[in-house]
Length: 474
Image 1 (cartoon, rainbow, N blue to C red):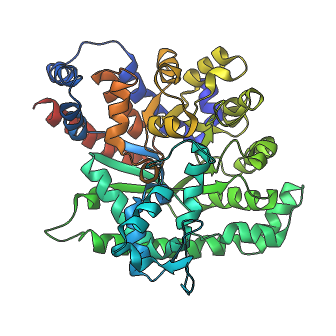
Image 2 (cartoon, rainbow, N blue to C red):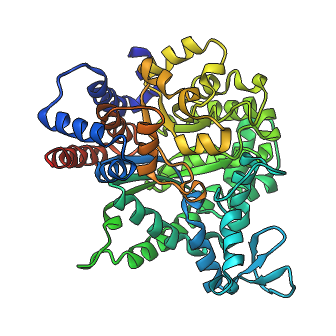
């Protein structure tokens, strides 16, 4: 424990709360009558998908700690917004683009409202619906969806927030950490303009002198506008307010690991600076395919950037995609150290996916280290299945649980995967054979290991326990 506190510095107070809550799910104790009743109801529903989904939909789930906002949007929403805003649809690439819509291959997106075949083709291209093995792998199809709808950009950010928070509330989620980039690419452009310098102190100084903090403040104003639009759409503050108004939202800045070193450096610095400027942002994460050529080539470089820059930002907790790998997308040589390096060099106190942990060098010692350091793993069962082909007993969730590594279920990209948090819990029961107490522990972890401030976390914890008490009295 002393080692843990020294590693996290002033985050020790937060970790104290985390450890206390985590232990609730790890210490053997008698079930309450309410837990026994809920466990019996779940067990009796295991063979009936409809009953099981109804049970899980009503179950309190705490938070979703790993949710890419652009990937959470349903493809039908992209189609509707593109039609309303006058975008064009590029038939050959199934991509949205700005007008003019002036050729047989570049048609008005307004046609989605009348041409059901065109709309169906767009939905298939923007999600995993109907994907079949062929010229494009599942991973390639999945990751290609984001660029196909990106033209809509920040113009619908408020609508996106409204959709995701409303859905979260309907799924009994009270807290979201959304990965978004409200800067619309200004940070990587700043990095490109400054250029690369292997002297990190010089590089940082150039970025700061070029206006990095001003760019952050400008992006936060974009977020202000989006949140006002969200509240308007959800009728917050009125008698007919949507339940999504009550979902607490915090943001995680996305660093695109496939970009040039100067762009990645600029984004890491911005992600670490952001929480001090705008408290709605709580962390950063490295995103884009971990198995991509640039991501693999520069992995060690990115970890050293994090190591150096975090020294001056010790209060910013870090969550990193790590181990989102399988033999479907990469070779065994790539799956040897990403999780360990992300923790030991990149200072991650949460890990996204962690699918290849059993392929890492000395996996047993790594699992023990993760348990001792209380490094939570954000488990995305549907995403791991559709991208990596890892499911059932091949998934390391059982190994994490057996070693006492804290875990929480997350959605990742529920719009692309056509899933939601209820179906992640459904997979946990049907695919991973988890019981009610384990699910409840995961829900508690999703609040305990959140990056919300202490007072917010205390409120969320109290609300979650009250919600469980009501649910278990049914």
